[in-house]
Every structure is written in C-alpha cells, then in structure tokens.
Length: 329
Ligand code: ASP
Image 1 (cartoon, rainbow, N blue to C red):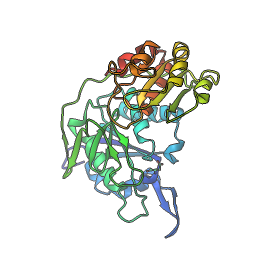
Image 2: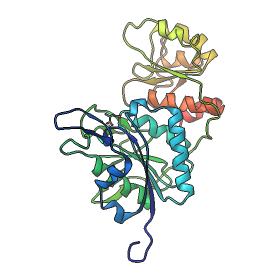
Image 3: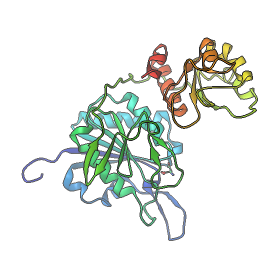
Image 4: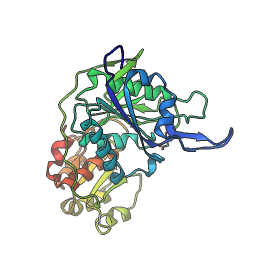
C-alpha cells in the first residue's frame, strides 16, 4: 500500500545469466548462483514501487536456454498476467537476449509489458549493473506508456524493441543497440520517455509442435557447399542464410538453392549487422533477383538470428505460408 493506494502488481522471474552470477571468493571466476529474491534484495526501493512477486525459473547461462524452456517461461508470464500482474520482468543472460526477447514477443498476447533485462557485470564485480538494470526494467514495466509495445529489452537505461535489439559488444557495459532505427525510449531520472507511440502488433498462436529444426548458415569468402548440401538430408525443415551485403551468396551456393528452396523455406538475411536486404538492385547469380526467382525469401530488416526464430515458430504453428508477410513488416 502507498498512502492507502494499493501498489501495482509486478512479477519478476529470473532465468540465470551474469545478472545472477557471483564469485565464490575474491579473484575467482563467476557462476550463476543468485535466485530472483537475492537479485531483488539489491534493489530495496522496488518494494516501495510495487507489490512484487518473484520466481526463480532457472539458473542457466543464456547459451543453454532453449525453445521448450522459453515456452514454459511464457506460460509462467501469461499466468502472472492472468492473476493480475500489471507488468512482468524477466532477468536472464545477455548472450541470447536478442533472440529470447523476439521469441517471446512473437507470442506475447497482452498489452501488459513484458520487460527483459540482464547485466554485463556480475553481482560480485565492482560497478555491477544488474541492480540498476532491474530498477529501470521495473520503471519501464510499470509505466503506462509501455503498454501495447510487446516485449521490451531494458539495458543501460535504454529501452529497445524485441524485433530490433542486438547485442553488439561482447563485454562493454553499453552492449545493446537497435541498429538502423535506434532504441524506442530512455529511462530518465526514473521516468520512461518514448520516442514514438506504440505501433500495431501481430502475435502468433502457440506452436503445436516443437521437435522441428531450422538451420542457420553464414556465408564467407570461398566457402564450400558441404554444409548447405547437408541441410535437407539432416532433416532441417527450414534454412536461414546470413548472406553477404544486401543478401548475396556465391554462384556455387546459388546453384543449389533452386532445389533447396522448393523443398523447404529458405530465408536470406544480411550478415552485416544492420540494414535491409535488397529486392531489385542486383541481378548476378547469387544476388537478390536471382535468389527470389529461385523461391528464396529476402529477410528485409530482420537479422539472421531473429529470422530463424520467426521461421521456427511459423513452422510450429503451420503458418509458414505467412512468412513473406512477416518479413515485409
Ligand atoms: N555473458 C552472459 C551474460 O551477460 C552470460 C549469459 O548470457 O548467460 O549474462
């Protein structure tokens, strides 16, 4: 209660990652050990902002998270909203945050914000950013202006949308960016300032199968075709290629894509880190005009890793015919 006014209900779940890590003794390396209540204990002011429910959902490095675990996390978050949470926060490792956030965003059906955060410095390191990130995540989760924006990633007092955010630095404190479009907002002295109103969102139904697999291959200079040829025989149901420049592959890769793209959905995205694939500029073998004639889908702005998440979910819901319209958004 806050002077007789009930506090908003905020649910926080933790999955592990650096934000949950500390060293057993000075000079030792860090491991995930802190549960959600211990992370919350470092931000005592949060208890005055909200009626907080906590759940330790895991203690994993984020490289070891998977789609099945994320569907369980989603079920937990949905049930928290159904029980009255006005905001939900997930803390996790930053290594896969750009992928998990997009996965959950594609399935998040509520106006209630789902805010994800983590830390670049472990709890036992000087200047650790976990508590500050958790506090800003709470400020974002409780802000009226955050409603209807799907899943948001809050790091370093910056708010990013799930479809755009990328981890662009391995160890720096300022490790997250939304290349090409910029972040959607900032946390300024505890207030959340958005640069634009929320846009329309499309949400996918829950997948009804999870055993299927989508491969992600990156092109590189003078790459042979052995892995590309193995994709279909190995049973992958979709392929994403992180391609050169505006979405280009070598002539030898292009020669195989005719057959492959008629057997399974193939998306070509750019490996550059920002910008869109082209549609109608280049016509050489392996360029976008040739690839589209072969039945390949150009990713547009979506990065290769997020393309894989989208394709996996579309295959799991049987909605892969909608792939092109999702990529054109
Ligand atoms: N370095 C990672 C992090 O920032 C570890 C992980 O992703 O779990 O949390």
